[in-house]
Length: 309
Image (tube, rainbow, N blue to C red):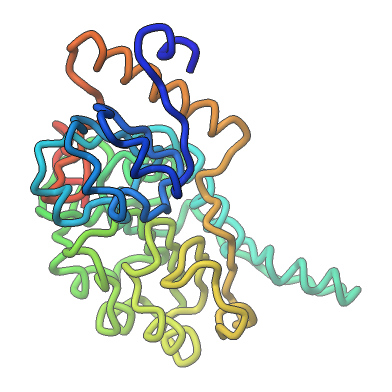
């Protein structure tokens, strides 16, 4: 931050002091992207012109008063793409190669040979066609998987997905995929998108990966689909309630891998976030166009690639 401190008055605060710190402030770096403090401190934001969120998802921030205000919001699009794509690939490999069962067998000192599957013979539907979904599609294609996308608008000949189906028609398309990957932002349109009906339409023996947001998936319906079919496995990094309550059956269900909202957390991610903000802050101070401007009505960055959902 020394670079910015040379050209601007910078105040550091925690959530408790945000209301006072916002008085007269023109820009805000929201480092704690899970915080509700901006909403609570909003009456003090009369001078605010720009908020940068150190996260890809901005669902926690976009309360109605901010959406309606003449305040630009930018996010950390691009920082977590590769890490999350690798997490998805690792989750798919773990299921296809039965690595979770191997771990349990090792713990039981049991020697049990069995056949596993080739991922190059399998299919993946990536729900969410933003930068995270696109990096995921490229990586899965690189190992030979047949990949499609699901976004707001159906289209063909996409450079990363090939075919993109409409998210509104997801129930009609999930039965094609061995692996359904949720990489969409949480918006009013995506909340509950992976519904009871969508889960029931999935391919028998299929695998659900969620690295987007927990409320995109109907968690109660997922538990039922894992227990009774057709879903055989789930790799879950995000949940409706975080941390995942200890009483949740997901902790102990066969075929379920639980991780602590960490799919994008790689060594050096905080430094990458800081560098990205400094670059954008220098643009802002110079009156240049900002990068990663969020469409506040939709809840994501819109680029030439099209819809982010």
